[in-house]
Length: 192
Image (tube, rainbow, N blue to C red; front, side, top):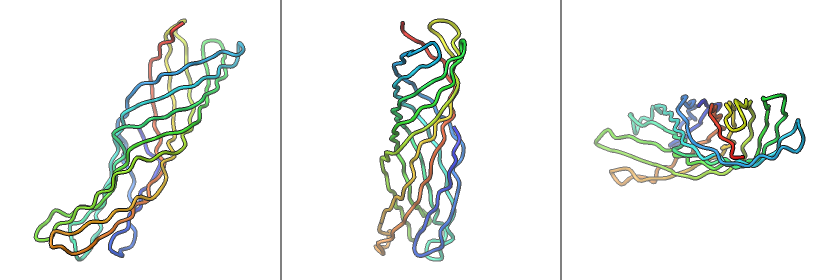
């Protein structure tokens, strides 16, 4: 899995800190129905339910919390529900798909260095658009190989507040999140 986004975070009046998500692992399964409307065109519906986990963090250099860092985690799951259309040439099909996606996103700030500690965590299930495309090649009437790129439009802002261990605060954060691109390769089985 790769990401195409940068995450921006603000805390305690500091200038925003930007950090990019790292590449992570994804895996999962797809259930769908395809209908070949002509020898050259396939339309279908599918649902992709998968695991993915990408994480990033950055130090904020706040004088009041010298060890504080911002973090963002996408995952551990996503669900993409889409319609697709494909152009068939022999055993190969080039396809495009679009619809919606839902995923879990966690953001926050943490400083665990005493004497004053702070932990602000915001956990959100985000729903947005999904769009992608790829190539599928039929090995026989049932088995095929597939590769695709799927963009999940999970842009938005997540905010949260917390109290420090010395009862000061509230301390609030705001994190702007960006899109994620999932690159998948798989083996498909068609029931006929």
